[in-house]
Structures are given as C-alpha cells and as structure tokens.
Length: 290
Image (cartoon, rainbow, N blue to C red):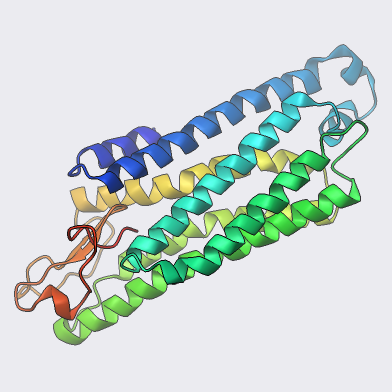
C-alpha cells in the first residue's frame, strides 16, 4: 500500500528526469525488499520445519548462525546490502539537489558510501566459506565497521539536508515573519531517523553476539525501503490536505509560500523575487529535491 501511494504521488507530478529517477529508485528498492521477504520466508520454513534441524536442540538458532554453505542466507544478505546501498545513494542524491546541485557537499558522503559498500561486501563474502558463522571474528569486524559507516552516513546527510532547509527558512522568515519549513524539517528528521535507529540496534546485537542481530536484518531491509517512501507519501498527503497536522498558518497577506514534496521544495512569494531566497537550480527551476 505504501509503495502504491508513493507511485501515485510521483505519477501525478509533472514528468521530468528527476521524477523518473525517483520512481526507478523506489521501484528498485521495493523489488529488492520483496525478493528479500521471499528468501526470508524460505529460510524460516527450513529452520522450523526441516526434521533434522527440528530434532537438534536449539536447531533453528544454529541454522541462522551457521552461514557457510547456506546459499539462501547469503542471497538474502546480498539483497540486504544492495538495498542499503541504493537507499544511501538516493539520500546523497537528495542532498545534492537540495544544495542546488553543489557536488562539493557530496564528496565526503560519497567517500563514506564507497567505504560502506566495500566493508559490507567483504563481510558478506567472509560469511560464505564452509564452517563460517556470524560469530566469526573477521566477518563480524567488517559487519560492525559497515554498520558504523551506515549510521554516520545517514545521520550526516540527513543533517545536511535539514540544515540547508533550515537556513532557507531563516531567510524567508526575515521577510515574512513566519518560519514556513518547520513541518518539512520534522518530516525529514522523523523519517530519516528510522534507518540509523534500526542500524544502531543491529550494531548492538552483533556486538553482544546475539542471534537476534541476524534476524533483525530482515526488518532493516524493510525500514531502508520505507524511509524514502514515507517522505514521498507524507508530503503527498500534505499537498492534498494543506491543513493536515498543521496548527499554524502563514499570514493571509502572502500567497501560499511553500510548495514541498519528495521531489521539490520551492518558495513562492508574491512580494519579492525568488533570487533573494534561493539560487536558481540548474535543472530549469526544478528546485531542491528532498
């Protein structure tokens, strides 16, 4: 349902390369999440219905912990890391467009993204050899390193997006005596906090060597997929119902001054020029994508 609402919100906008990119990215993540659910279901059926595993004391936990030779587990972990890479790359793209296509602000996030891709991929590869398990020291070290980079990347990029919107809001507030971006910032912070919170939980479970950390990855895939979808859908609801969840309204002397969705954040005012508030976008006035 969430994905359907997201597609509907994107499809009803003016089509542009950015809209197509966003639709492709969310569709790709949805496909990865669906594939992961199928693999996890097969794993659960084997873990809890296989006679050999069921006859072994604590057999299900041993099945999940022993990764070597478990092709279904390795496939699900590969889907997990690819989905995480896609979510982070989409987040960096949003940072790039919000900052008026300034590539300089994306250099450090891209370095962290490459480092995360490398460490996470190595962790999955190290879980493949025979007799490997989630308690293997080397694989665990790379997994923890990858999750640390993922948390730092998500927090810093989200903070960068929020900072730019807050700074723009301060500029408009000086002219309109009304801060128009509060609900937008809250929406981005709330949705953006899901992935770091989930990753932090997995990190702690793996540090203490709890088998729940492996099962928790199944939830992390869905959370990583939901995060961009939530922003798009919540913004679509806000545009369809402008007064939804908002107790404060802009002064009546101004026209509707904020137009924001998962694709665009643009200021409109009848009394002053756009150039005073935001630099022109390089993409024909598309504005800042959040």
